[in-house]
Length: 402
Image 1 (tube, rainbow, N blue to C red):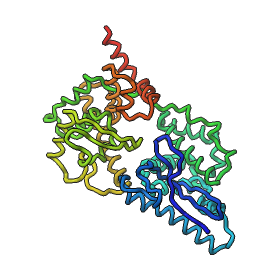
Image 2 (image 1 turned 120 degrees about the vertical axis):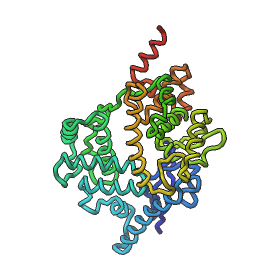
Image 3 (image 1 turned 180 degrees about the horizontal axis):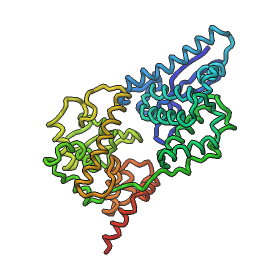
Image 4 (image 1 turned 135 degrees about the horizontal axis):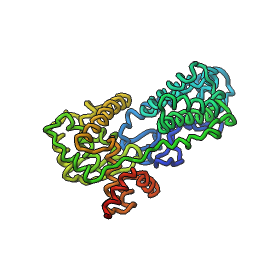
């Protein structure tokens, strides 16, 4: 007797969610297979083995989960035709693609992982891995690469190659972490033995990759708030996005993009942060009210507050493409706004969030209050966050003592 069920494993992740796995039981033995989905307990129907209506994309996510289950059932069907006494290990070998020798090729396996990410709606991660895979192919100059060939020396040479192309610690770190995650999956799926793991020697942690966080003073923020939009009408959306983010506790661009009118009442905004799944209720301050009124008067007729997603019910890939295109323009126009306002700092979408934290800090607000308002999971995160603020901000703060 064999049983296949989708379950929420009781192994809490750092995000506060739990991994969703296929649980396959045969002859009183059980194996778990990851699906790349995670969920909170309140949005999971454990009896039915699927997302409930509390999950924002429960219909689409349940369809994708069914595909993972169908894949497992297909493999079981094939094994039953091949032999009577197949085991869970046989299922794992087929499911983990070890039986196909070509999959021991790094690029082939990487392609499959990217497909799994897209299937799970993790389009951002898929794009990061596509970019990393492309540059490794360019460096290696061959489509044949095994995991055993990815040695510490290989990684060192790859780092030198990236630096010769103008790569920074941050950019190189992103690519190395993608390779490391891929290698970990390859070990997990029995494609390579752990003894060959190159990241015991090559340390990604040496690539700090974090320049000091850029943050504005309250005076600089007010310059953006007071920007004359009649003289600069093409910057209306960009200015509004920045001001809205600042006065909503540093709401990030993804959450602004997905914000719906139904999540707003007369006094508050309610939303779940995409990154941490934390729930927020934010009081609507006058600058935010002004922006909301503007978009109500100039609505595109969609369920979304901002004119970023131009129609309802987009696929995850369409969402990611739209986000990428709009964010590019947003960051480009922010730099032009900085020039107009006489702000000698490279503005980007995240500067609004950094500035919110900085301005609270300069106003003397306690770190634990800043931490809770920003949705950080613990005080240490906030302390590290504030510590990384640009030194120029601290210099300006010190000048207040004169």
